[in-house]
Image (cartoon, rainbow, N blue to C red; front, side, top):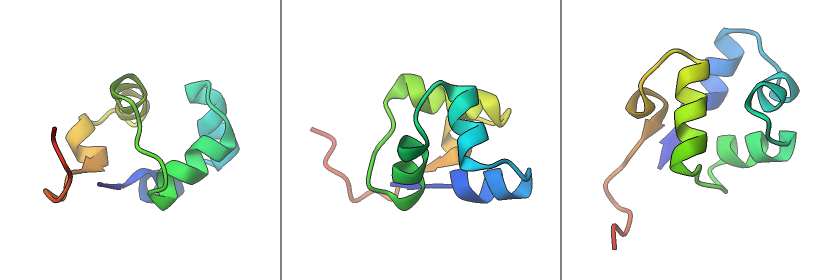
Length: 69
C-alpha cells in the first residue's frame, strides 16, 4: 500500500510534526507511514483523510498485492 501523505503534506506546507500533533500521533508514526514501514489503522486512516478533506482511498493507494486474509 502506498500513501500520498508526504505529497499532500508538502503541497500544504505542513511539517511532519504539525501533522503528527494534529492527528495526536508521534512524528515517528508520520515518518513510518510516509516511508511505507507502517500501515495505518482504519481509525488513523480516517483521521488522516479527514485532516486533508479527502476520502481514504484518495490518500491510501491499495496496489492489490496485499494479503486480504
